[in-house]
Length: 297
Image (cartoon, rainbow, N blue to C red; front, side, top):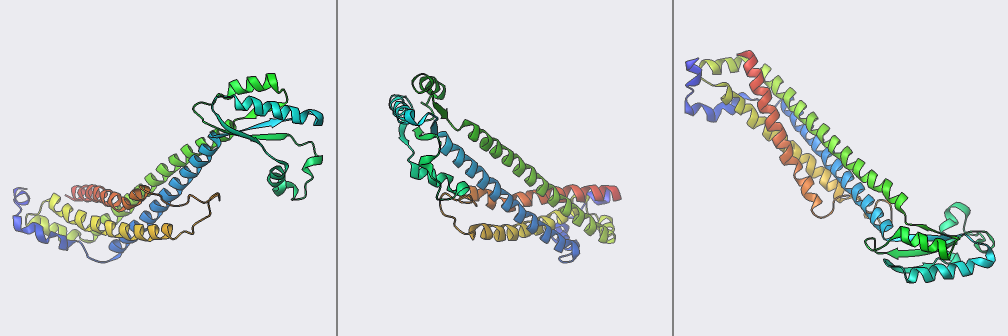
């Protein structure tokens, strides 16, 4: 026991040579780290993209509202004028306008075709409102409209914003869970590779112990090699994934996938994937090596 604790200082620099520089475990570590880093970058990209899209839609809806006017044909113009008069004196309303028949026809065209005779159908009049969300009192406006324009109904889009906000929260949780799974899978693959390498070099390790090498010193050799392999694999996977995300085609504003990819500082999260992979590999390798060496002592 005393012999193992008195390891010569010159022994440590060459200890890394006990870990094979190539082989199945080395290849497995590199490929697993690259694949997991690739998946992690794409998970982050999709999470950030969905979050920005939900925030964009929610923000757009928060700054708008619509008044729907359902009245008899001879009362529709009068009700519309009253609604517009109410809106001009309502705090928090930046602007308001009646949506003309041409725009209504364009909105309904995807469902009823471009030749829909809007003028001859009992379609409610619509008034579009731009608001300041902090100063806009939807309930107060509803009370005024019910008194001065009974056929008018305010839609502040709150029922549309709530699902978008819930979706953004759910996507963030799914992203965190997915990243945790990726990290766990990376740690498991590295652990298996280290254990296989330790088992294959059992005779060498026993000889090293006989000449004074400590378990911590032997474990350090595996930690260095496998952390480096995992880092190199993660760098490769991150590079490929980042290039793929950056090469995604640009979508015109207003389309569904406009926000796909990273934006601004979000790229820092993608660039941090190799560092996180290195830390994961270091912790997993050290724990696996020390546990295996302790069991074989």
